[in-house]
Length: 68
Image (cartoon, rainbow, N blue to C red; front, side, top):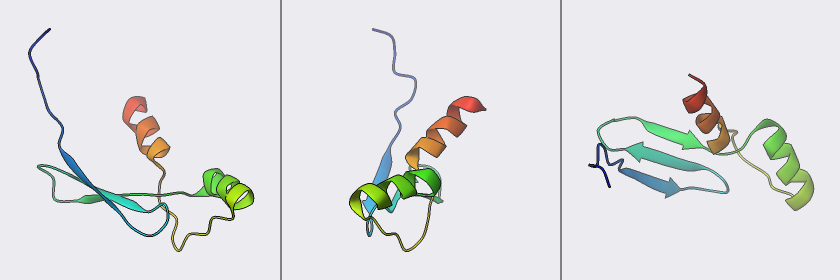
């Protein structure tokens, strides 16, 4: 096994519904996660999910991180 290059540390807080915030150690900003668009439409139709505010989904952050 090689040497550990980096250990990522984060704190995730769950809020109402699908809304969560993540705080990454070493950075002062919080990142919002939730549902929007087609993802929200799917969960509305299948489970009756309602949200107070739309946020980017975890999938959005994942795609953006590998696309750049």
